[in-house]
Amino acid sequence: QVQLVESGGGSEQPGGSLRLSCATSGFTLDHYVIGWFRQGPGKEREGVSWFFGSENWTGYADTVKGRFTISREKDKNIVYLQMDGLKPEDTAVYYCAADSVGYGSLTPASYQYWGQGTQVTVSS
Image (cartoon, rainbow, N blue to C red; front, side, top):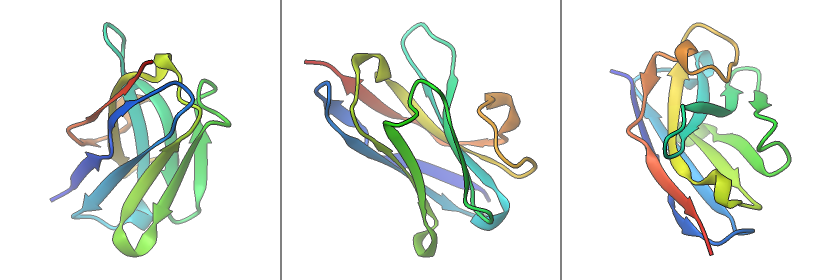
């Protein structure tokens, strides 16, 4: 049974950093794409970043490129999203998701499995 559990959210000031974790189980991470998405108040869910395990391919939305870094801790089947230079517009519920078919996408509809989300709030 595929499971994804996010953690690491919280409140941070602009310019600060947070690291989100997505603990995965029930599947072989090498064969899946793991994506990070976010949904701000009154906004649609948008793709932030993705990681394709077997090839170490990554992708980022333009809004976070150069500030966020996605990585994988292989032995623990955890995918991280390191978020630096946080801005108020990064405030959202962040979700990780798994795609068993593709090779990397920022489109929510491409993903079959979702975690429950973790809140990130950036304000002074």
